[in-house]
Length: 619
Image (cartoon, rainbow, N blue to C red; front, side):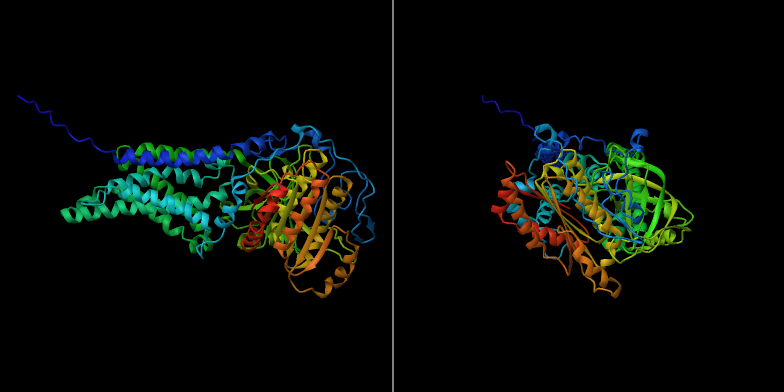
């Protein structure tokens, strides 16, 4: 008599929650792999003494540091305090100042023979795979994304869609899974949207560079939520339970309403034209999503706690980074902007980082305390005291225009001066204003400019704040014997050459400091694109008084040719150095300028890249 094996129930597949968990593990696993790939760069960065300085929040100068010689200011009142010795490179000539090039006291930087005294450099993934990277950075039609971003977004979107509909579309659609997958993305979108987030820390990038992913993850959450809601509406309609079904889940509608509210008010036209509405919509939508999620289904509270914890952690970090201070605001007509100075904040940031500024003053609007604006720091962090935190706010909107008018309406006037022969600046007007300064944020990440053999820095208009701090930091590292940099080219593109009347003091200071060092050279190229006014004719005629390393040119620069020539000059440094450590290209300015610099950088031939040790781009 034969025996038959007992019938077995076929094994069930993973539940919707398990699928969502597995997908999250895969996504965060990819983040972990990228973090491991960037680990050598992080190690090289934090081995450098300067990079180990705390950049978590701003610090004030100690009593000993306050007695140190101040850093060169960028206004006409600093004529007697420019430089790092007792000899001022600017000489008083009555009512004007001439560009005085005085390389009379060359000095040697401290020895950099010890390996631990100079920064090490580790190649980024983009530099290692530059042949593929040059194609991945090309724009993808008119979408606003690059080819590389489009490929990455497509892979992520396919992954989400596949998870929503795999074995779940036919013969019947189960709408629970898309909802579970959408909820599973909540920690990711909150992490990417936070100003202080774990993803940016692991990858060594600022939150502003992760915003593009934050927006795309939001699109996929909206897709999954919409599939979830539509699926249930169809099922309820077929079964004749539409009214009862919709009325039985108010918390679900609250959560979906928050998702739709964010999706609509985050559209580019609304975000760009009505940013305050967009900002308030975010915290309203966030709260609606988190509260609704906690009550919508049994395990929803777990995801709500994770998302809420990320949100709370971010705001605690923001509070820790926030400083309440009185700032001196000064209208700069030549630049069409407002200078913001906080002298007592002297430490706690890196070159290229920015802050988020709010104003608390009766001179501004009643709701301006709720409006935050990012501004790049124009000065360098200095542990031994110095000029302090300096920002420039370009007149580009309602808030910056009100700030400029508040500075112009001040009663305190400073004496006018001149930075070029035969040209006087207008009297500067300053006033005190209470401000809330949050930061620092962003910056070059794991890139250390002083770890490269050369630096090519391009700035447009008010983007010079990035260039000023970057060049200043390189020179300070060189003076301390902590830099490998031997060549710096600083390109500034402006519309009106009248901008030079305010910035020439600090630019000539860079030239004199580099001249006193035997192992570094700084070239400054200034391009103006607007027709020359009659008042500037005499100034341009006196351009011959500029030192050889400073040029003033009409028109727009041919960045491709300039960068090629710069790479060739970098290759010549090999004769005086054992080997080359690469070239870094930095850029700050309008989006069109950024695209031009990116094209020029990607256009550098592979043979030249290899000859100089690689070329990195920092935007």
